Length: 462
Ligand code: NAD
Image (cartoon, rainbow, N blue to C red; front, side, top):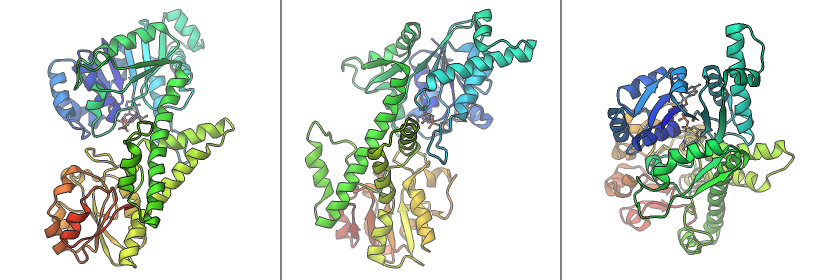
């Protein structure tokens, strides 16, 4: 099928590349010329395991192209994905201006052929109808600019034979394993009131539904949840709100464990084995972050307020998380007392392992708070240190290896559970430190092994 994906971030580039890999002809559009240049030269602007290799093979097969020309993308695609960012506004609402610009641009370039416009971006409930409206406005504006005709979008569409439907197809991929998740989804959600659009989406995803590219092709078909547009939009918010709440829940229990002397890692195991609860997202730590959970939970709280409902539970999940983001500071103060003049080393900066994404990462909070308290902050992160991708980072010296990080530190905080942090030379690192203190912000390291080489070890809730 002919597909156009607009926005080539973590979601758009992975979606476009994977759809090209399974045989569709995909044009990816981005208005960032630098990014387009990079992608045209065969490089990925983001770090995502397996993505570069897939981009190369799909580009070589002629199935994957990149452009900054929206008109060319719209002309090419029978299915047009909107995959631009929806960052949070200071109010907690979602900033939909990029979606709006793209929808207007699509409208301005629509011609007679039937198109399916897909909201892949996470957008507030009701955005399906809103996008339809904006596309029609774009169509009317183009008509007015060309002919001075003041017809409505509906009138222009009728006259020109422009027919399109809007589908909500929220994305559930996890950064760090986005390619895997695209080929092995737990489910695909499609929201639309058009049978024709649904059929095209089913045809598009058929190879994935049939697990042709799955790690385990013998599994049953991927479930496809077909709903109205608003329900599909809500499924995305509800999923993220649930996961964030689950983490806040276990963090709250961890804080109680810290006081009563129980071990949260045992509690997580003990409750996670209950199939009604499940073991995932039960790891206590220094709080959730990243580009999705904080903004999506806040946006849902805001939507509830718009409709006269106070989302108590979600607000509490956010509050617990804000408090949890300070837990490493509390533990450092517990051990070192005064932080002014001390040097603290962070192991990891990204909000989770296997990504280069620093958006709303707990490390950023930690750096700000440590600076505010007068501490010097250093960090080592396998990706950030290697690639020099340091945008958004200030108040921290990024070291090139873990031993340089440890040198002269009064404490280390493990912020991101990168697999390579399991087997660092902690013996050598302890000897390089002023005080061998380890705050394990993800309960990830071997407490006994660290204590054996001289570390004072503090986990979260253990
Ligand atoms: P991103 O910020 O990484 O990428 C957005 C891209 O859109 C950028 O490359 C930007 O240059 C481009 N863009 C902006 N305006 C444009 C325009 N007018 N025309 C063309 N390109 C334009 O964003 P992301 O992380 O990929 O997220 C995209 C959406 O998917 C968001 O709504 C997000 O909430 C949702 N989502 C993200 C994830 C995730 O893990 N990142 C997971 C699920 C859903």
